[in-house]
Length: 268
Image (cartoon, rainbow, N blue to C red; front, side):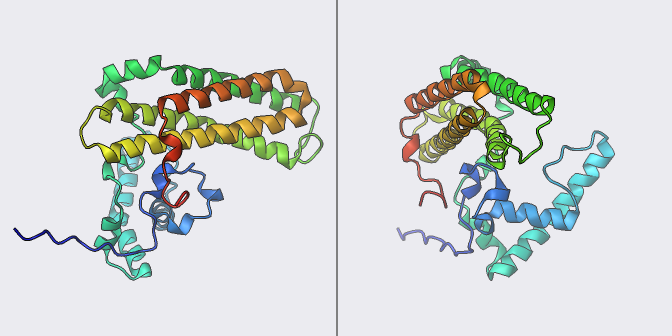
């Protein structure tokens, strides 16, 4: 029986699947031009004049009109990307080796579809730890900003320096990312870990867990900087650092292979 001829993958300049294991902070990313998700979003925004990050309009007619505008423009954007990179549209698709089912998917709707997995996940120590961290971190941030207002500290003034503002920005950004990546990795584990030949799915939940670990590490470093610069908040911030250390330990324990995962474009 003749061997099936494998389709040659054309290099189109994109890193396949890079958007699945990043921190979603596109403005700070040095690999924007190599990310299909970023380039598609940028061109769609330019063409449709729609901010894809905004919530859908409440009114059905406006929401449908917005969706139609985006859908109608998608093929034109793909064609434009292909022409710019000197490849065909099919080459753009075929180079993306990650399963389409994982694109921008955080298993947000699976709580209704798989109640058993949802119950198990809610009992996991890392989820409880993340919940405690999120609650206390939000409260601590609010207290810090309230103090800034009370003493009428403007940005750039001591101790409200750019370094402090950047650390607060990082803490806020990564809080939601930690939560979403923990949930994604756990759902992936509970749905696919007992499946045979689920190598890609295993890579996906380990990759998501690695992003969560990186976000925890960045957050911990940011809080430690804040603790040094805003000494009046030292007790609360020290508590948050301990919680993040515990969360990191829980993720490592549950996903021992996560740190070895090579994120496309970042770790290769």
